[in-house]
Length: 433
Ligand code: HEC
Image (tube, rainbow, N blue to C red; front, side, top):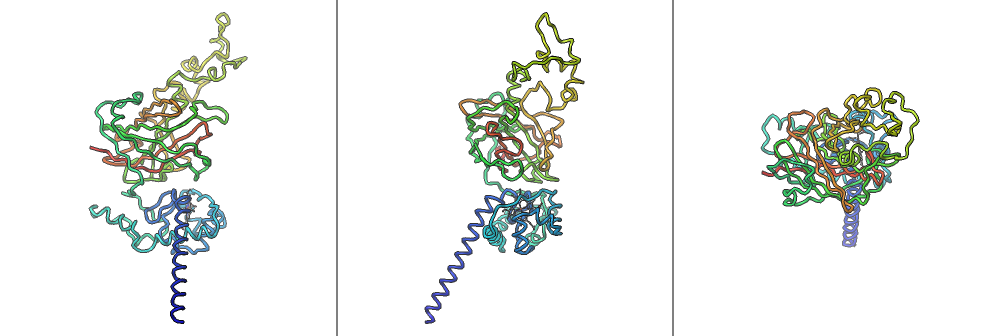
């Protein structure tokens, strides 16, 4: 009898254990698919707070409501939720279409990862033993992690999943030389791309699976050779028509590794953004309205009569931006006239250098030094981007032997624009000797 009871007990315990393990395992899947981009468990803040021990600082009921719809809890005036929201630059955590069971599974996973002596914590602690005392003193210790939203970003290096080696080269980096000999000597790193589903407008249907990248560097420049499949070359912009684009992103320095999603407050990123529409301008001359709409008709062009010459059959619709940019830009092309880098009709390279420190903060840099060139052939883009670094300009990236780099990719033919893009989170970039 006893023995039977014993066996039953064992069976029940095993059952419970496996249910628990299964919950945490299911939770891990959900976490990695829906939370990972914004939250770590014990590795510091990303877009949202570190969730280590969140099960200890909040009740389960609160967590379920907050994870299901954080804004509902914020709007109800809940002081904890309001403070979290304000402390995170009012970035709303998107509503999660998850059942109670799924949320509980995720919480089981967070709890299992928060258990004392998690391997992640242990390696993080043992990895940085040789740090000088002052910076050790300011380091987050395992004991402080149950304080809500303590953000410690100094010297915050978390190893990324993918590692890219950059090799030194002597010769000048000319992005137009897409077949330079040194590229063929380097092995390409294949990186899977993900659809951006977190910030609006989101990408629901990815059309690109992966890209390959190689990297070389010189004292004040880092170059990337990137290739990806794109069956449609999209280099025009019109109503509901967008062009192919690519962006490379760096943290400004390696002391503060910001969110790869456009950086964050006090964590600015340096972005170099190539656009296929500008590539066309650079190759063929500014693609004016007349080029796109050869049959367009203009009756009057006030103030520009001096350009008209009936005897030479020059009519209002023939007046191009290039003609008026010299003499009539003040009134007719104020963006160009005021040197707005976005409104230039003559540019050397089809690329823009910008900075961001959070969603909606992207701003063009005053000093444009980046270079890029691309070629579309047989359903494939091949792009070379040369990024100025360590130049002393505080808006451009600074680093020594390593840094991080992230990538974004827009498939214009599939309506990609703004946040509706493919991306690759931080990749570790190592400079080889
Ligand atoms: C787009 C980014 C984003 C995603 C995706 C996201 N969160 Fe959040 N989360 C945040 C932000 C930002 C906050 C801080 C509160 C705010 O600003 O609304 C937060 C706060 C939280 C909190 C409160 C933490 C605390 O200290 O009390 C929990 C719990 C949480 N998120 C869980 C999750 C879970 C679980 C998922 C996945 C199912 C998830 N989040 C997905 C951005 C995100």
